[in-house]
Amino acid sequence: MWATRQLLEVHRLRDRGENAAAFKLATEIAPLLAGQVDEADIWAGFSLAVDISTDPAGARLYRQPLDANRDDWEDLGTTPLNGVRFPEFTTYRIRFELDGYHPVELLQEAVVGAQWRGQPPLSPVVMDPADQFPAEMVRLPGFNHDLVDYDDYRMDRFEVSNRKFAAFIAAGGYAP
Image 1 (cartoon, rainbow, N blue to C red):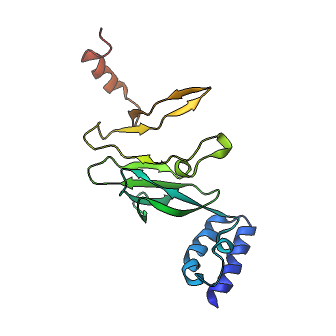
Image 2 (cartoon, rainbow, N blue to C red):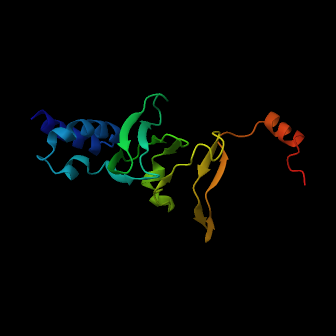
């Protein structure tokens, strides 16, 4: 009975555009309403479900709201995962971890896709072996722009300081 009353609260929050609050409450009551209410009735209008995979499979997936403490991650399970829910119009940071591989951090938009920008979901999320490139670099997935296909590439996680660039030049950087 309590969960059924809370479903009405989920709908009220959804109708007011409070998707994060609706999502939080729906996450709490969904297991209590399993088999009693159509799952679509719980989640409709404020969330979406996404299938998430990695290459290789077996990575742990974590998420946190963008404004959360950096140490506060919710464990969502091991890839591949089906039907992972995200509230609409709320941004989450997601993290993939697999022993022997570089961790991957993305915004959930990467696995959900940004159809309004023509960006399809990233599937699978590629995990790179830890010995393949330095830890301070990240993989950026390839894309297509103006009928040109761009391959995946890597870039430093942070911009290069003047001191590091001077050391690069002193070490013969850009020399023929």
